[in-house]
Image 1 (cartoon, helix red, strand yellow):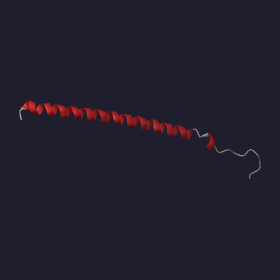
Image 2: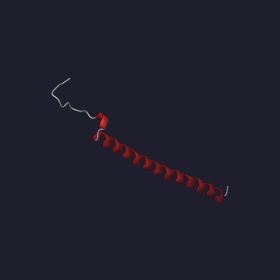
Image 3: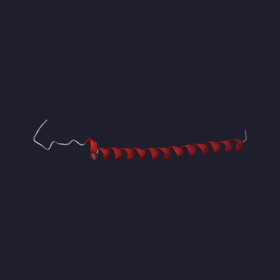
Image 4: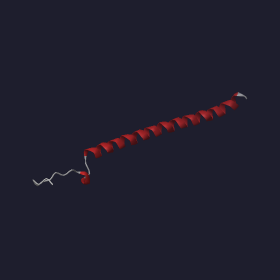
Length: 64
């Protein structure tokens, strides 16, 4: 094969590799943002208890 016959497929393959690399980097950045949001949401839920799960103390002196 002559040089141009090898060069054009090589350019195509290199371009596909670069596109794949860029898309992979973008996907990992998106996953990292989602993980941070999920961790923030969990920590917020841990700080503020839900209305149904609040442990209420008895007001009267009767312990029954």
